[in-house]
Amino acid sequence: MTTFADIEAARDRIEGAVYRSPCQPSIPLSEITGMDILCKLDNLQRTGSFKERGARNALALLPSGQQHRGVIAASAGNHAQALAYQGRLLGIPATVVMPRYAPLIKIGNCQKLGATVILYGNDFAGAKARAHEIAVEEGLAYIDGYDDPAIIAGQGTMGLEILEQVPDVAAVVVPIGGAGLIAGVSLAVKTKHPDVRVIGVEADHVASFSAALQAGQPTCIAMSATLADGLAIPQVGANAFAIARPRVDKVVTVTEEQIAISILRIVELEKGVVEGAAATPLAACLSGQLSELAGKRVVLLLCGGNIDPNVLSRVIERGLVADGRLCRFTAVISDRPGGLADLATQIASTGASVKQVVHDRAFAGSDISAVQVLCTVETRNRAHLLELREKLQTHGVQTFDSN
Image (tube, rainbow, N blue to C red; front, side):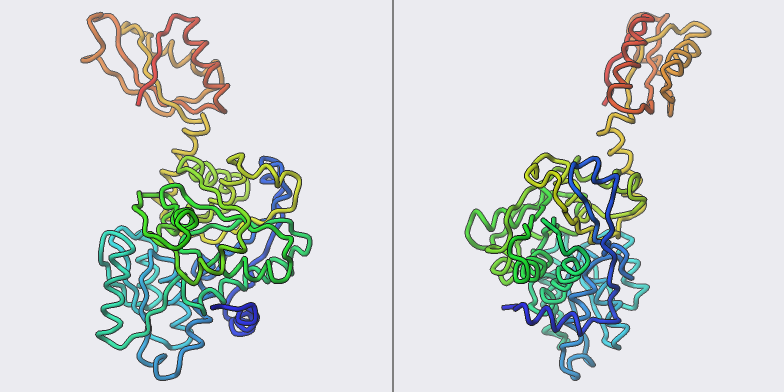
């Protein structure tokens, strides 16, 4: 079992090899949450996530003979990148087995960092099983990304840094996947300051920690696809759960829509890029489930920034839709000359912006003098959208929602 002394030793061990990330106050996030928000920016690590902390500590503790033979791990991406990078710094060969669905950017980055990448299985469980087989076949050390005691100790160094950077912190909000991060952080925080609240956050599609709490022990769950791919672990680690369970004050779950909106908020308000897992702490604060933290000093762990640019583009668009700032509706207008120009004029008069227009004559109904126009429009918010719909209605333009 990882101890607080292990975390302190890990801090000394990773010194100079892992970036001591800033923990910065955020005025805009404080304003929208009603809390005094600070962000621990581990998305600024060289490989884009907190995983370097545990990877460096675990690799440095290996016997020299094992360091020469190398290591292997299963990972959806961040642990793999951390092992590849820190292994390269230490001269330790790294092999990573990633699920076939792993984000392309994470696969490419692992290869660039010198790791041997094997794509296997449709989920993390399949990749992990194959990694264990290869470890036996080739004499490699398997390094668990969230349950290895050395990994947990390394992740706990973030908790020590937070307490040093924000001595008066009231609560830390931590994403939960396999539970290695929250185990290490909660052990560090609760040992030094038992009164600081530790809040865990899960994506509702992959809530394995909540399932473990209900069952009283780690239990395997069925998972669904999620924006928070870094949290997509079917069963929390036994060591991690044993450490975190008595130290975590509260666990909440957030929806895919809340995660998407939080990614958008961080892009717009913090000028930062985070992956879905790292957006869950903000999603929790915006969800209304942490009202007890109103006005209190709260640290959000923005623990990863490795999001595929194509996914980020889609997430931003979905966030805009959820926000009421990007909408689509069908308008029935006259097919005579000037009909479309009149519609565009009415939309522009409200300050909305037309992004796309598609005519549909063939399926417009029995009235051959009318045409359906599928409009994608940018608005300021939902109230602005309502204003636009009312404006069109007063000018005799029939509209209805389009999926």
